Length: 412
Ligand SMILES: Cc1cc2nc3c(=O)[nH]c(=O)nc-3n(C[C@H](O)[C@H](O)[C@H](O)COP(=O)(O)OP(=O)(O)OC[C@H]3O[C@@H](n4cnc5c(N)ncnc54)[C@H](O)[C@@H]3O)c2cc1C
Image (tube, rainbow, N blue to C red; front, side, top):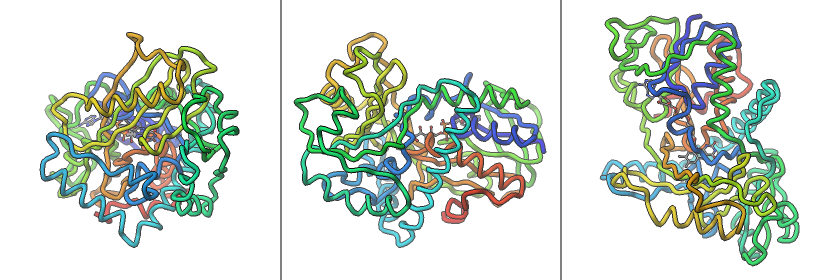
């Protein structure tokens, strides 16, 4: 089939690779000059699907400790639409269907992690991967509120070990000896990696399979009644056998003229990437500080600290208290691990394309030849390769390894 893809973020790049590998003639249209310039640019890099869920899904917080970490702050510009969306988010967290959706998300995440690893091995490329994730607990009583979540994840087959402070420091020797640490939750299978770099690797791998990437091409409209795209500045629409929409945040606006309403919001967050200062003082894998809702990951010769969740443009300026929390957490947990005053420090604000139940939309749109793979929220990197493989199977009329029914458009 001749298939068009809209968007070259991590989801679009993975989709292009899988469809090209299946033998389709793929053309990807991307408005920017390169792949992964928007949400996939500076993600925290966590590929630990189970441990991302408290960020990604409403109502999965664990009491006072991990108090609904995903519930976004209302920043300037959020207006009443932001308030209404946040209400929908809280409501989804209390929905009776949430446990089933959670287990579907956990399954998709694990499938995706296996697929990401298989591809990384196949490409034999360095994606700045690091193994193992620790959830840091300051007080002994912090373990207790996590128990319901832990039980659910273990029942789903996740390997999560409770370790004491000494063991946590053996796993991450750079952890500050003065920082309050009562113990940790260890996910040995957790992983981090550079999302942007992997999107570029996928792009090259897709091109090697014959896919074409057209940069600087903004899709203005999707075909009505036929599969096609109208590129800005072109006289006529281009027709294809199928179109896959992977446009992240822009997906909702592209679908609206077709009468499809995706209640997508931009949940903004931040990452700060600093050059490594001293390897033994830096994280070897990734850590999560649930109290401050932040992650610290090792990405090759850099350390990345990430956090924050806000609705609204915030006046176009970064939220200073959030950035301060990120700097303090990095220097508090790993003093001397990163050069935070280096001119090479990169501060990034990105928007997670998020639907009110925290899950993506993957599958048919209901319009001829138009498929959706979008709205991955806080887990786009962790879910991209699995979502892409499963959607490619669906398009080929094969049963995907993961049931995509929970991720259908029909739920909105
Ligand atoms: C601070 C932060 C930390 C995060 N940490 C993690 C993490 O640890 N783990 C994890 O799994 N996820 C994480 N995420 C989420 C993850 O980054 C996103 O879910 C993911 O990048 C979304 O990928 P995407 O391809 O759907 O969207 P994008 O990367 O935004 O790609 C969409 C692409 O479509 C293009 N496009 C849009 N409209 C058009 C158009 N009309 N025509 C042509 N092209 C168009 C855009 O230019 C863009 O390149 C984080 C996000 C943030 C903000």
